[in-house]
Image 1: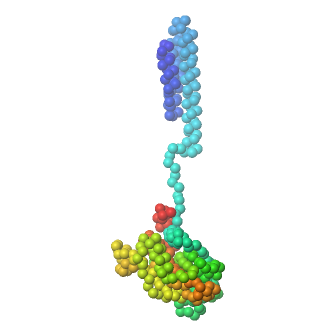
Image 2: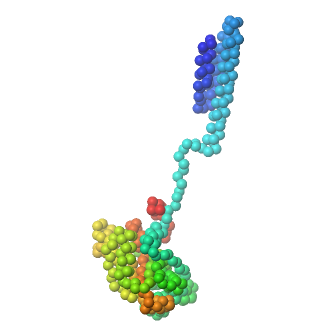
Image 3: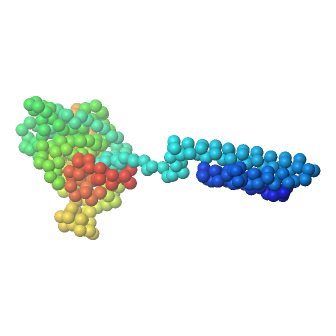
Length: 339
Ligand code: DAH
């Protein structure tokens, strides 16, 4: 009998339960009316007087241990039940955090800023609501100059002097007003034109303007700077400068980069030529320097301006400029990986 009790005691010690039902079954098996302990007590009655003391003790120990075991197991199970109730299953994978993404225009703008920062250009900004002087007149575009027709302007109310800037070139004049040469700055920003909205044009878009003024700045410096930019931005350094006209630069040029004709899209975007126009540029017109009280005999410089949407459309193969302004989450969430 003694060995039986010891065996049962060891079993009680080792018993483990995962549910209340298991604990209850365990309790009934040992402590129930027809349980093992009752059997032992019945058997105990037949035991010799000299063995009684010893065996009685052993049975009691088994009974107490079993009772203790049942209540500890119950408590433990209640604790975990409480925790699961409160926090759910603590071992389950966490819910995915919805992270936002940068707008493709910001991505491209930041990349352009980065590229020019590396060669010493600072970033400058100006107001989007501008006056005629900074947007036009100071840039060698006097009131009745025909070149004003190139940019359809939104005027603010009836005041012909206050307008939404039509280009970031207005920041050039603001910057020259407040800073002495040498000047090396780029100005990213939003611009506005009174244009019909289509897949290729919008009344709001973004430009990045560049301005470099110092002693002995030459056209070769301009070309080198642009070549560095196209190399960094597109991995392409074959460029050509086509003579053009802008009132604020003389001479002026439009920059084409050789994009190649490898894919069908290349054919489409380059109209089968392989060449792609990416910006306007030129040597700052001496009249502009004079307007800003910079001596054109002492200083010279170059300027350039590019459209951010156009570059973003090339970079991400986006076929419609309106996508940038609709804020459709299905479009925007595609740029998550580009953070
Ligand atoms: N402001 C011009 C435009 O909006 C772009 C431009 C051309 C900027 C030549 C310049 C430049 O600084 O030199 O079309």
